[in-house]
Length: 230
Ligand SMILES: Nc1nc2c(c(=O)[nH]1)N[C@H]1C(S)=C(S)[C@@H](COP(=O)(O)O)O[C@H]1N2
Ligand SMILES: [Mo]
Image 1: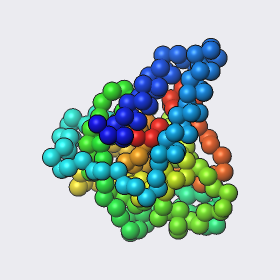
Image 2: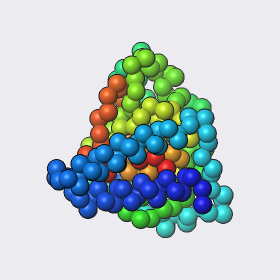
Image 3: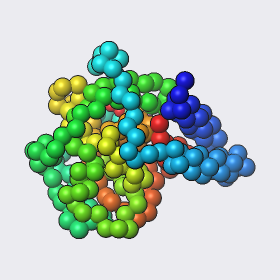
Image 4: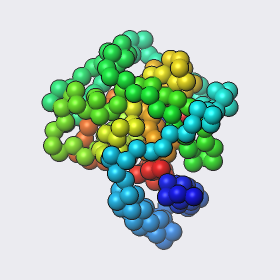
């Protein structure tokens, strides 16, 4: 229909192929690594830091009971007492922020269709603070190219390219559909964005690190595409 959909289908196809091929060093994997390199270059070229993704209308909102929750731990992760978010890496002002402090920063609302590579999608409204706002407060050193997001869910993590992380539709969300984020969807704080696939949206956040190198990710290190733009 439009370029966004076409690109996503391309990605999901490549991801699925990557999973089937596994992580051995077969010629297929080498081919897929080559494809991923090419694919990331194409996606980066198409990505514009100022272009906003269209938001689905309110009528497309998924009833909450139909929005599948997902986590890698054996049971639903719950925030440790005294939870706070560490912001570090190559920054002038490393910070430790409470939820109250995050909620007092300028807030942004987004309605996004979530795409999981397992084949489902769902729409919700998310409220939080832009990663770019956090970056401004922390003061990035010029070498920063990547952002790493870590969580208390069995150390789940993902790393992002800086332009996607600083996009106006990438936030650290503490609210969902007009209420506080619940533990099934990543409380107290999760990443949410209109420009990436589901597995990049790290839930149960503990740390945001601004870095000069890629640090992979939980699924990315098992063959899922690293860039994963939508
Ligand atoms: N900490 C953490 N974040 C995570 C995951 C996870 O297992 N642990 N799963 C990812 C995947 S694959 C998806 S599709 C979404 C699911 O978000 P939801 O539970 O709100 O639907 O979270 C992503 N972030
Ligand atoms: Mo997913």
